[in-house]
Image 1 (cartoon, rainbow, N blue to C red):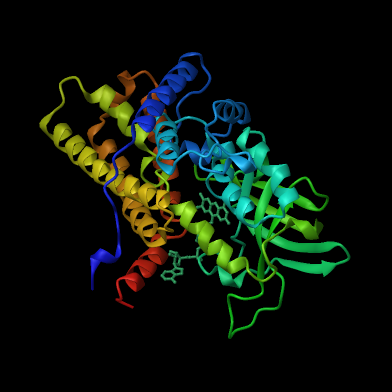
Image 2: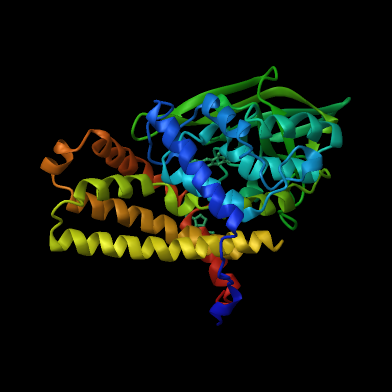
Length: 386
Ligand SMILES: Cc1cc2nc3c(=O)[nH]c(=O)nc-3n(C[C@H](O)[C@H](O)[C@H](O)COP(=O)(O)OP(=O)(O)OC[C@H]3O[C@@H](n4cnc5c(N)ncnc54)[C@H](O)[C@@H]3O)c2cc1C
């Protein structure tokens, strides 16, 4: 067994990224001061503001790494990392554009028909077009090969029937990148017969129903398709190649700093409140949390370095997602233990809200984007243990 199969290269931030960080911080401070947003825990999956996303697009911070010829900004993965990291650390309302910027855009650039790509990508870059992920179904989660929502060939396109579940943000999105069955299941070739489609969520026959989470917030949905027509040119890549595309997309889905920074705003706000006269226990807990977060950041940044060099760091992303999402649970528990009620009550009101939202949201972190048990299986295989 060799841990060296995982690579986490040391990354020095280039000067351009250091300057960019200052710009992003200034923008965030202005937005917050002018009431443009109130910080939220788990902002990338729960704080949707198309207006804010448009402002981010106007700054040139969406589609940052995409080729200029497609409407992107041709910047580095490290520059994009700085922007996403700062937005998450501030708890900014980035949900509307998050999925399109992270994974749907790259998928569309690589696999869509040129005219479809040219129609959608500039709008994503402008913060004017948002996407959802349609992989899971009522009876399909970890085992994506069992997808049963069907696309049947008809004149000029495909007719789609079935239900997708847990579709984050679909209620505010324009398109769903959807994994569909285009051929009957074959027990001997389970990953075949699947294809990816770009489905316009305004199409007749699409019904989106919000699902409230444990805290009563509606951020994910049940999306039903009833005889929905999808034109031929909205198939992504080749018919039957859906599985390979989904695997590539999951690497992007799991590789970003949101996997360890979803609750960072809670830690930051707690530290601001606890900094006067901390007890020994408080110092110890905060010290441990900061040390762990620094290590996770070092690993996460290494993944951005691998993306920059053109690698597909699927295994590194799985490892960081597993460790980081468990850390986020631990962090909120520990913060709760060192924040007595009188300190919470004396804070300006933001901390109790952030802590409550963080605690209610964190159970989802070890499920969404692939459960930790499934990630551990992948890691074990990579280490030659299974
Ligand atoms: C907040 C949130 C947002 C989400 N957003 C989206 C979205 O936008 N689009 C989308 O398509 N999906 C989304 N999902 C769905 C998510 O991807 C699935 O919940 C996840 O893949 C697990 O699937 P499942 O819930 O069906 O559980 P199951 O796959 O049924 O798993 C049940 C349990 O069995 C375990 N298990 C399953 N297989 C294995 C295995 N091989 N080895 C060991 N243990 C195993 C799991 O770890 C889990 O504990 C979201 C989920 C959440 C919680």
